[in-house]
Length: 273
Image (cartoon, rainbow, N blue to C red; front, side):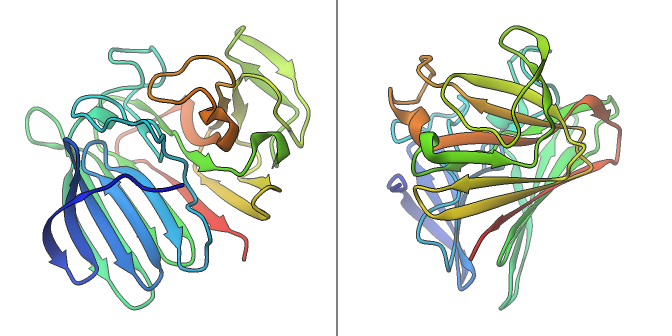
């Protein structure tokens, strides 16, 4: 997977630069531990490739136009402060609003980047801390007065969905395509459109990507739900006709148990070495 061409704006730190992809400003990390790219719209992690990885961990649509005010297809969009159509716009406004790149700490072993979302009164509504080392750790904290939903809508980069197995999930899930609680296989393979919400009773999910000969592990901390999504042949905005073949969403979420003020959720993403 090749990343879109970015225009250099300025150097922030020897390991950090501000660049732009079409209308979207992005922070680019180039460090001994690996490379990452984060859009300031949505504090949206677009790309992470650890130094020992042959391929990017995340999937990003090759036809994404990168326009301000439009959700970006790929990486990790933040669905917050609501999920799906529980408000307007769908999946909340956090992913289409500009966040502030508020702080960073760089050492030889890791890079920590902090992003802040402010409300209309210029009060902190949410913060997202990204830590990159041998693993990627995302820590989201909700500061709004109202309880909120959250999904870290993570698109993982695969060699072939037909050769992929997802491990570690329960054998029951809410199928949102028919709104029915169903018994499902675990481990799970994919041969059709999938949109399921699982209980996060097991904190670790593993994506076995046979085509790329690697395993991605996602640890869900203080999550109540795990969402699994692949649109299959269903027409999806800003996704090519065959885009579904190389991606799978496994989302660390708080949907049925909402976040209260000051509460945090973490996702830790590891690649087998």
